[in-house]
Figure 1 (cartoon, rainbow, N blue to C red):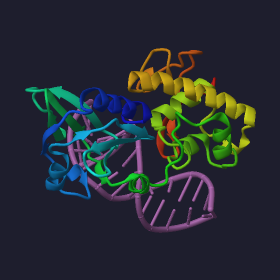
Figure 2 (cartoon, rainbow, N blue to C red):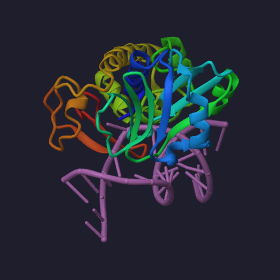
Figure 3 (spheres, rainbow, N blue to C red):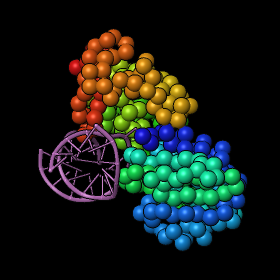
Length: 262
DNA sequence: CCTAATGTTTGTGC
DNA sequence: AGCACAAACATTAG
């Protein structure tokens, strides 16, 4: 689930429910999602403090801890993570791994597979270091920047757009959706595209990201590819052709052989 | 029992 | 260096 759009939704959950509220306590049901620190340290850091306005970089959620000198909680959701707000008294879910309690309810990190989790960072430099080699956020990148970063790559579009060090935030569903809406074949090599074609790709990417971020997910609308990708006999909502399903760049890929080329 | 899953990392080989 | 591919991580659903 968690790609740029989902993480943007989780960022809003934190911003709307938790920012500025004093943290009463932290319950760690499964310390496996704490990466590089103990439950004790997390409690000591957060109790009595609060979160400041959170930001997002690619698929990372960055929550500054106010009142602590330059401390940040970083969250990466892997393939199955989520951040949910629960009013007080709501029964916990089987996969709620961490709960941060505050007035009126609690923020829960829910994650079935635990491929990623929570990270702690100090100042801005430390945050940058922990995020690793991340390209510019896909939502902020300009057309010229996109061309500059991808134009000379010989990799397939599917692979290049999914590469977080090139562009941060796009995941499997978003990449397929963008390529379908822009009518590019996922196997096309990036270097084969003219600057003009990149401008077109950029425009489509912006539209897809704006609508997805607003929805807090890649919307499975009937007019979108994402609304049909799970149906093995799904048809292209634009032309009615049976959609192709395959593995490109080691990922399940869905595309229209008519609109995007075989 | 087997397969696949919206992510990342690491290793191998060309 | 850049790229493709496979495996591993952990867990559940079908």
